Image 1: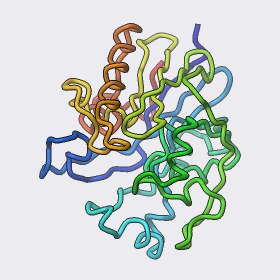
Image 2 (image 1 turned 180 degrees about the vertical axis):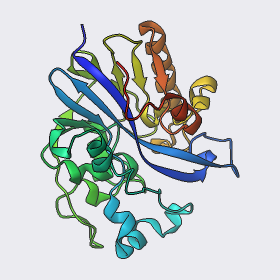
Image 3 (image 1 turned 60 degrees about the vertical axis):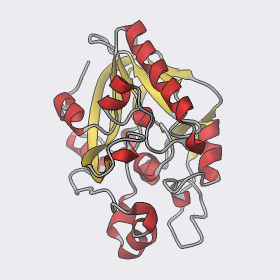
Image 4 (image 1 turned 90 degrees about the horizontal axis):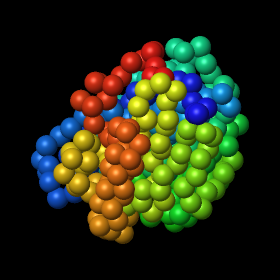
Length: 270
């Protein structure tokens, strides 16, 4: 049995960047448009969000936009998020508000996955202990301290202190929603296996596999924690094996053609 009742991918922005950021050692010079995604999983025990997109304040406030995105670290600029795509507005289209979400699980704490945490200040936020440690150390430029630290940052970024539920290993949130350790892109990355009541299981790869190409060719993401590409490839192989063992489908996270083929909003999977 599974506690899952419905599952929805939610488009909460797009980002144009060089493909080599997604496929290590290949694709340089090719610009892709990647979806920024959150996933709403409704269960008999409450509503779960897997990832929460970007902090809209950092995109619309000129001072914050300059601070966070207009730097050599973001040569391709910030993501694009329309009013319709803002996660609270996506939920509103379903008759929901952020207060209707019971918990959040973050695949990792990069800006495009954890930036929206301040919108869900009431929720427990599940994260791997290695991920939280890496984020607090600002292990790479895609961690924005003010997304997950109460005092913000030295440059005036707005702070937020999530209600952490720190996890030391993979585990089941509820029956049918299983967090899978998949390090490589970041130190404590978590993918998510969702068992549907009727359809085949869905394995959300997160940024362990940005594109279908990462899965098909077993190519590491362009950004790997500590340049540990071998760890990232081992996680890709692990996810492929889980999909094979469960009869499920591995979903890459930033692949626009894949997303467009799966999008049913405001409909759902079950």
